[in-house]
Amino acid sequence: MPELGRRQPAALRHRSADPEALVCAARAGDARALGRLISLVENAAPELRRVMKVIAPMTGNARVIGLTGSPGVGKSTVTTAMVRSFRDSGLRVGVLAVDPSSPFSGGALLGDRVRMQDHATDDQVFIRSMASRGHLGGLASATPQALRILDAAGFDVVLIETVGVGQAEVGIASLADTALVVVAPGLGDSIQAAKAGILEIADIFVVNKSERPGAQEVVRDLRTMLAMADYGQDRWKPPIISTTAATGDGIADLMAAVARHGEWLDASGERVKRRRGRARAEISAIALTELEQRAGGMPGESRLDDLAGRVARGDLDPYAAADELISG
Image (tube, rainbow, N blue to C red; front, side, top):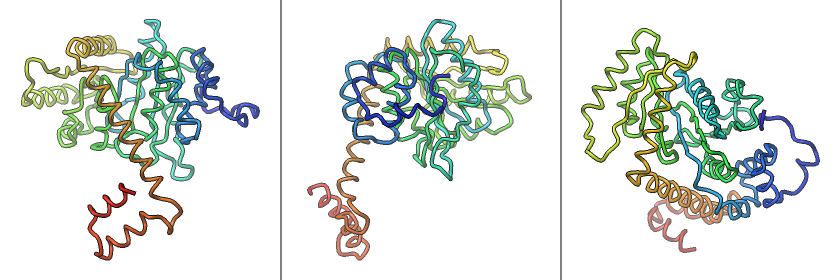
């Protein structure tokens, strides 16, 4: 299976990264090269700047679909079913499955990759687990750059499955072209969706495990809440799709809804707006990280620590401290 955590040969592991060669190899279908590029992202390696410069003209083609929802609703099963459907259409598919960080290693727990063994022998499917490492928004901080790499490598569709962390999951809305919120009966998801603001981020609601008692009540609750929302003539109103992903029931309807939303994104110009917003957020995050690194220095010796001490003592207000830090 492409990049399923297998150890790379020693020659590949220890060879200094050549961004141009890695990118060329990844675009030619080399799963090891693609995995190594994403590892550069996760490790914030020095070569990453060169990689991003090389791939910049190659990006902007992949459709990005995000899936989010509470634990236990069947996100991975829905993802697997969608991958199968996209492959039946002859499309190359990348999957970024953001796992909770291991409390021991800081790495991904790999649960999603274990559950997606159906695609283990398909060299046109690339699945990568990424550790959230405590990052809010249900996403790993490296996800935007990993997405950019899969896009440049020629994948037609990239599916991003997020950690089920409730309110913080709104981060997927800024990253995906189409955001799917997966709910299931018996978990109080419809009420939690309203509380967590999930209604605002969903482009499509997926009521999975629809064969279970209570599924129609979930659909009814969602319809009621959507009816109370103000959807203008030009706005997209999220459809509610019932599925039993484990058996494939309703997946064709889901794929049709995804296609309709894609058409609306193009016709309304919303896709361009979303991608511009995604790039804006990505730039801001990189700039803030760079600022923190420049300000940090060695623990106990940094300018930031000095300013923090002055603010804590009341010698300086935090706005003035921030201005002083930025001004250098």
